[in-house]
Image (tube, rainbow over all chains, first blue to last red; front, side, top):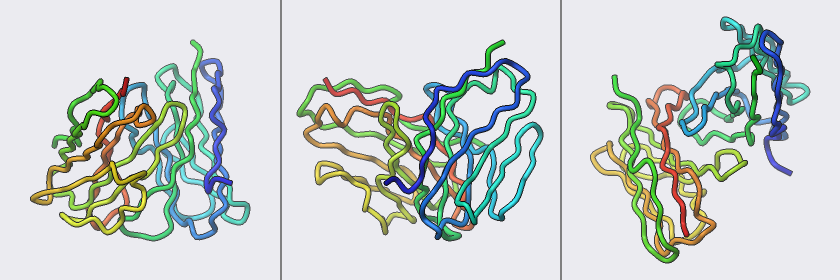
Length: 112
Length: 113
């Protein structure tokens, strides 16, 4: 079993819809959770970074963490065609420079 | 300032040849990471540098893979006697010691024929 599970998709939704992307993990030591967005033929870019269980909002994006269920989500409101990309969840155990453990990524397409 | 840069952006090589991939991290970033991303798969950690030393080489898939970093700056990932399964995008990231935020370069797309 992988430490981090993420549905690879692809996921297609109409413009303006709310998108829900999810990851589950098995390692209870993970404490820091990130969402990266990766456009085609580009490197991943950090979207959201959270530590605590609960919600963190940034514009149209909301990151949600439930440590008791080992489940994290990224919600995108009012989705735009420019949101079409692969979204990767990532997590680490301790503060400091350790390796990130990534999910496989979910390919998202927003249909105009 | 400038972000993480990688070169070449694309590399096509024949099976059995050696390749060198280069990463220039963000200036001042002491931590540097190499990842591999195979088609349809997530990022796979390869190696991590703190300064010029590599405290974690656990992800290197075989002894054909090696990496070095000099001057707490540029890093080179070398793959010897390339195999077709080495075909992937090789991504480099850097970060400040004090934070966990890793900034990624655009990657080098390696194709082994």
